[in-house]
Length: 97
Image (cartoon, rainbow, N blue to C red; front, side):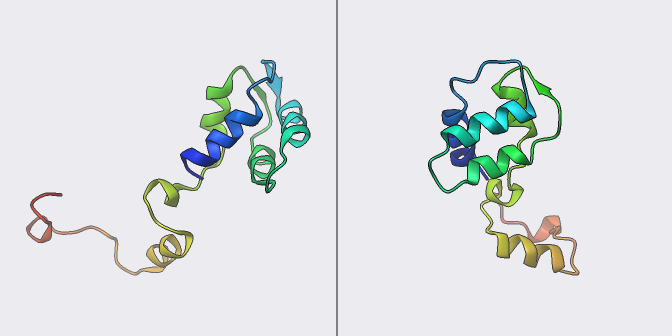
């Protein structure tokens, strides 16, 4: 999940009163999510606790790190299976990198 998925989370939680527990956040999301259910899935993955604001939720939502790298899930899995450590020697790097 990248920026768009969190934008959907933010839109659904825009009228949530803080502080809120995970259970309150999930219930609020379930009541307002009319889409694919992706937002509710993300909210259910939150760690148990009480959240004081949307920023705390943002830092706790398990986003897909591959999306931030511009990699798809298949690319990320292929990278993880590679026996190579993904580092490139200085002399092999492109000069504009």
